[in-house]
Length: 563
RNA sequence: UGGGGUGUGGCGAAGUGGUCUAACGCACCGGAUUCUGAUUCCGGCAUUCCUAGGUUCGAAUCCUAGCACCCCAGCCA
Image 1: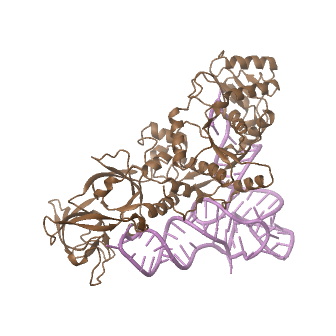
Image 2: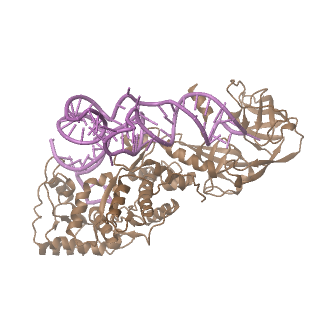
Image 3: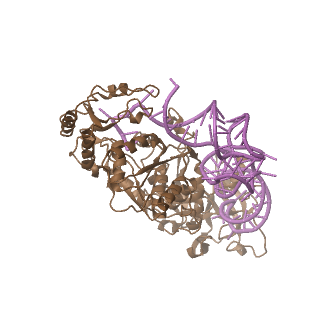
């Protein structure tokens, strides 16, 4: 991937409260070497919100000479799958980051975590509770009323040890008992009201198999895993802010080898989409989309399939900033990053999405010629190619109007336009079918304008893209729009009801310049005047399929809309 | 009626008592250039920083009191 120099990716100059903190910790010796981690739970695919966390964690590590690891928070075998682990690794790599060493897993530390739970019990800081889930909820109190202590709270250390051992050995059913930290049932912070730290789950784990039937909760695994790994700055999102006292309490009461600190920043929200795993999972399971990598999905794999470059995602994230205030970003910012990058690197080709046949009456029948076309006006190194021209070509239906207003710079009866890299043509006749639909145009061309310029200096207002009927390749092209019609679908009680029925439009019989066939999945290209496109994995040589990654800015569309 | 957070233009975000009649980016609105109505380029876009008091020669920045919004009552993360 050849990235441009003129970018705004995060750098050593980037400032935000987290980087400021890291700088000062490094400066005063609080931190010797920065260690961060990206800690996904493998219960779904990564989305662009995760990209913010990935760029932050890996970004600061490289900016400040530290390391960042990938660690799976796999403490709940009921929801986690190997498929997700594989997809997450692929997505992080594709985004352009390399984690330090092998991927880590909270499950790698199950032995230690178990020993630490025992340690808590031995110090009178944890107890086995026989209350069931519903009872625990009742005893917990409410947001405004303190909780009550469980009748099992003051069991002897010996009894707790015995019970916890039997929990581990499978003596009890799921939910029969839990291990709780003994903290404070009257705390205003509900996380401190004797949180459950181990629960019984008789389910095989993707990595540890049947070795365990008790699993630590997030709170009991996360901070300790950080400590084991020597993480210095544990970066997470705002909703964990009130878990921090518990995070600290556990680290304080356990013989951990290091003292990590948690810092919270605002998660990314985007308008016109949903960014919660629960909702994305629902879209996939209920088949509202073709899968996790549907190009309309805000997942990393969906964006990749649509043709969004990793660079643009990183650039986008860098422009967001890291703060503690809730924010919802407009997708127009991502669009801008995509266009800015692709404009520089994508080779131009011609393709006609909604073909209208044009016959050039004064062009000799049976003849064709090769014309030279520039591959990328933004990059001389991209060179030139040759395109075939002949008597019959296709142009875009939108590029012709029978009754054209003066502001319309394209083709109309009697009007002259330029065919890109080819000739000036003038429309002489419009042919319709019985239904009155325009089915063909007749034009004449001016042989003196070969290449696209008139020797007499005459100017033309419009330049049209076209494809020669002689060698055009038929293809399917998929156009995408916002997945939802509501700017904040996540706020709707039934977000599925606000799905955009026009989020996908499939066009058949599109006419492509044949050189497009040599592009591979993952290559960016611009269809001149239409937008950036990418070959879809569904594509075959016999039936090529392209996705529209992003439209070009379209002032004409705007003029029409405002008219 | 508890605890934890956040409030700067349509969106994101700088700003940490004086050079703030408040950076920058996106969006938007002009206008120039252009063989993509693209790109590029110029110019415009908050006398005001949630509100109200107060301190000060001076406040978005300090104090006080309000208000608004977000998160927390999973044996999810």
